Image (cartoon, rainbow, N blue to C red; front, side, top):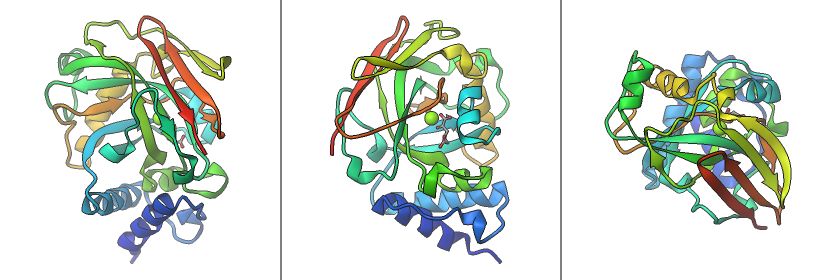
Length: 255
Ligand code: OOG
Ligand code: MG
């Protein structure tokens, strides 16, 4: 039998020590269900160290993202308080293997959401929306993985920052996004790239977490998934994402 706990320790240690590991599926075949079990067990290790769950991230919800990593299935992961970076803050490269930044939309929930819900039901559970940046970091060598590998690695979750909150009534269907590095645009896109409408990602999140026996909690943050391909980070960069009608989110990359 596959020792899921041992694999959870492997991905957790890799994240903690910021060292790349071979893909798990190179040594053991894994189903996606087993991969989610590994993810959950690896999060237990974080909770044991005092981290607290603050939200959920959706991944591979845009074509640009699927193409960049070569996996075309939606995935989800768990966000903790230790992953949150202050807007405008500095990211230390020491804690990451090969981080990349991607522009996202964040939802803040005012009531729990789970299972099969309509877009209208999902929207009624939203307290506020904000522009966000997710910093992903695969613990696998060369940022290369299968569907099961990335799921086991908490869907590459490593850090995120959220900009100013806007009312839930803000129309986020099709807002232009420009990601720039040191003032030079590196990615241009639209929130419409996220499943045609970021709200669909929230609907999908409610369904997916329920299959893990969870719900999206009141007060938690849901990241809808990168709207563009992710941009590799290097020391000294100033990264800024500007979302039409929602404002900017930015951070700097330290040593
Ligand atoms: C997987 C995580 C995907 C997104 O927003 O699509 C993700 C990865 O790209 O490493 O966070
Ligand atoms: Mg993401």
